[in-house]
Length: 186
Image (cartoon, rainbow, N blue to C red):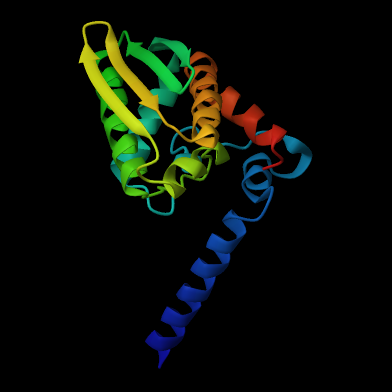
């Protein structure tokens, strides 16, 4: 009987916590606490976890955010999508970047949203429409080259917006994420 009560309590607490994660402004409030001061845990970076993200995916994000100064990025806006070249001066960061790109493109193609807590809502359309975007990835000496195109104008617009978001994160790290979350009220 005691084990049953404990299990039921754990299920209820987990359900409430997950529901609170998705309330508008909930993540922002947890991260900033009373008084609006940043109370982030930069050691574990809990915002990089997700409801279906693997620990390895969260760790890759942490490596890139902790070392964003090593990243550089070029974006070419295409009429039907984007072409990006991203690189890192640090081989370990480059490895994390390559794994992240392949993993997220694979997730988008499968419609498998990792639901990372700080994830931009711009990504929702990619996960909701598997097959609506063509992605080509090439590793070159210049970096990882990603070309993504679509015939769907809404996907193309989201590609353009997300390319800018990623470039901002590559340039400014978590500060860019914090500002994006504040702008959208979450």
